[in-house]
Length: 250
Ligand SMILES: [Zn+2]
Ligand SMILES: [Zn+2]
Image (cartoon, rainbow, N blue to C red; front, top):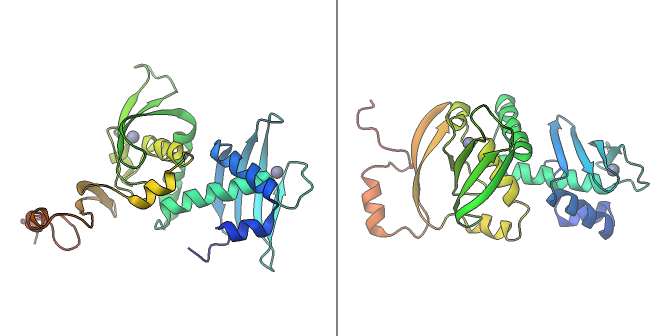
């Protein structure tokens, strides 16, 4: 993914805009102003809300043949790279950090749909635990015939698809994510300490349901400090790939 043209680290950011623009762009990103984001072959197309002027701007990022970032934004900023462009690049980085390994377009589309709904239609509240490992309530803000729908989301990782939600969509999607999980991740990624929690990973080992090639697989997520006793017990049930051992499968 390092070869991805639109992944910017601090050094690359510093080369495209002033500190002031970079700071404003980062604020736009953390305040969830990037409301739509689509990666196409050679372009990033996005929409950014600007509450300062009460407008929403369409923006397209491409790359010149010389590798220079080319920004086409509806705003009147005279800088070649505006704060909206910086916000979009942050948003894209957060997205790819989470879904690097996803390959096909249909999968991408479903995930994008979950992210979109998660951003716009769902309110989240931490019930127990913390940003990196905890239980959340996710409530749809779109009223249904049965009143507001609330589900519980169990966050175990901020960058792996090992999280759980009590909604029916999680199993329907067969992707290991749903709009409720995405809503929590979206909320979490703008909070202080997000990177530290992401790096720290899960504090405990756990068993989870993964989806692979459209099929459910029970897997073990062992942490490095798992005790020998527990490792020995798990070895009876899980093979080396952390797959659940299926004694009746031939
Ligand atoms: Zn702009
Ligand atoms: Zn859900």
